[in-house]
Length: 456
Ligand SMILES: C[S@@+](CC[C@H](N)C(=O)[O-])C[C@H]1O[C@@H](n2cnc3c(N)ncnc32)[C@H](O)[C@@H]1O
Image (cartoon, rainbow, N blue to C red; front, side):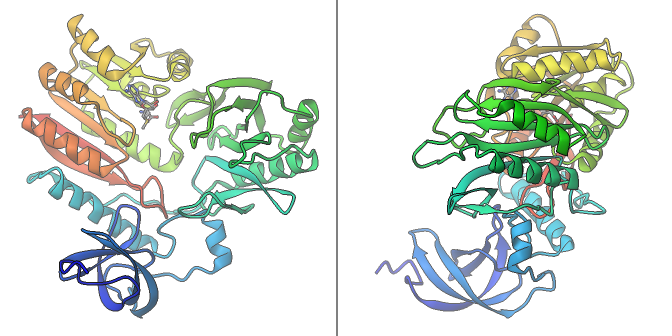
């Protein structure tokens, strides 16, 4: 037995939970040795069975709650099905917002070593239910029947479900109807293990403001049987449908969408509005999933940018040009860069759709295109970044530090990489003035942040 590890496998202990991890597990410590226990909340005393011990940390199973947190809510197994595996379903909304604020504060202190940044309380939703404008449900088979729903946590077993408490009702309805139609037409569900069958995922994307619906059928092969019947039945059942797409993903991968799409019926995009800007959204483009919180987030980004109409703005990782076009209305010129060519096509289309002529978009890697722009003499007064979870590329951060825009607005969906990148910017002559967390994903552990960073 390793003496530095104070517990052994199968021990039963009683301990008080001190914290939550980024994936929502409770953390208890025995003589400083951390044990991760799913289901237990900070402040709760619990009895726990040790199920695994590693050198620096262990895992436990919650046996009983001995002292209950005031933030705990009881969720029945039927309700849990409707949460689609949301990690914070057992915490009241107030408790979720507290724990997200704590997560941001800890990342900024531990990773970012930020001392002077003001970190505001999380801006939560008035109604944190039925907010998602997009669903992508895996399809499989059970007892000879087509099933679709969500993956059981930490497994690839599909839990068949027809309703999610976090999807907009129109999205729930679309998924349910398409699933029934595919089942009746006997379209073969995908078998992940054997890599056989046809239908891998059903996706629905809904414009909350426009009421337009896009259905995407992700298939393993390009041959989709009963195509015309399928289209006919979807249109009869869902009058809001504007676009039916087939996406082909032939690969053995967890990535949902393949690169090839075919329009089976209607338009190649749907439209939606955020504030007074209209957007065309194509199947492969990134579009924020929570329209209510997106408006809050973009308004905050605009406020932090402090535009007067004279500024040149660079928007790195611009997607379909959402933040760029919000900024373009208040800036002299905006340059956006994005890796997905379809998204850049959407961004260009969106600029003309809104009569915006001072925005220019280019497809490519932010870390390659922006240094090239800089060499050509394009210098930003305000630099916006909104990278994926892994954060900004280091070359891009170096370019920002060299270019010296007077302000950087950093939109992030991962506090850990945000904190890492803020440290790099601070070491390069910037100061983080304030960070506003926004709850874009209620009932999950995710939190979005927008940070205002100024040149010292
Ligand atoms: C979090 S999304 C933000 C999109 C947009 N700002 C919005 O709010 O809708 C990140 C975007 O970065 C793009 N992306 C990922 N890596 C990139 C890179 N190295 N260079 C440029 N764009 C990238 C993704 O395709 C995605 O559209």
